Amino acid sequence: MLRTLLAPRLVALHLLVIGVLVSFTFLGRWQLGVFEASGAPRLAPDPAPVAVTELTQVGQHLDGAAVSRKVTATGTYDAANQLLVADRVADVGAPGGRAAQGAGFWLLTPLRLTDGTVVPVVRGWVASAADPATAVPEGTVTVTGRLRPAEETDAVQRSGNLPHGQVATVSTAELINLWPQARVRDGFVVATAQEPPSQAKPVAVPPPTEGVGFNWRNLAYALQWWIFALFGVYMWFHFVRDALRGQRERERRPAEPPAPVGA
Image (tube, rainbow, N blue to C red; front, side, top):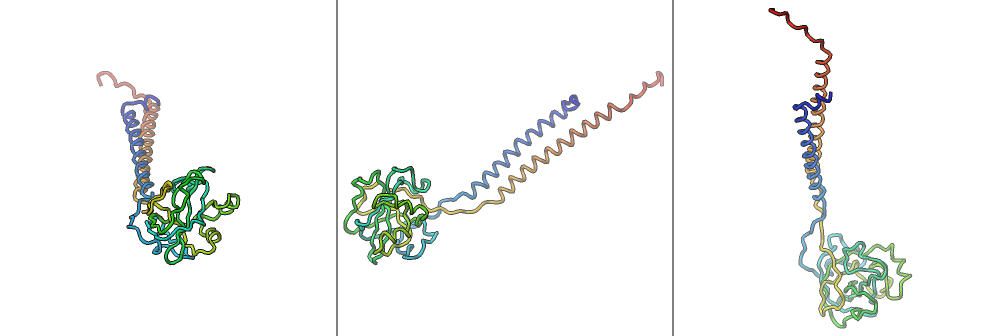
């Protein structure tokens, strides 16, 4: 049997099948990678800034389409009600926007608009509560930034364990209680620019993204390549089986007697 399997014709077949398996497997994996990448979020169109009053309301949740949109707001900061959001890093895109305890603070300051409503603004990040950058500018300010939805309230209970003036999340539900005299608009603005300029480190915030959906055709192509690979194995098995059967039949066949001399 080994001699049959190592016959030149079958050795060439073995090598061909190995090449087909390797090639078709990689081609299928490549198409699968294209399929997976097709469903990844992509940067969405980033329109010019609009007034924050166009996208946020009092008592209404922030629309999903408004998340990460550029907005502008003009008003005065309420320094007396500024809060420090504890255990934060200078990047909203970090996991949860939160790091290990003691990482730093977001400066969360209510910005009172001309219509009397309040927009929570993350003015920037500081390493400690004693940083001079926590000082709130006086007078009218103009803020440009990106909208973010209110954070989950499951961590609000942590705020009770924090020093006075610190909170664990930027939660509209909690801010309504902490700023009882204010009509708070839902969500919050992460400032990217301010006039007059802020001394705090800006907090990075990602631009809006959109999902474009999976390209199922690439998944079908991947399956086709793998099916072709299996079919190649199937055909290889039949060729080898037929060769072995033929060899066994030849071995069982009685030897023909030699032809008579002079016949």
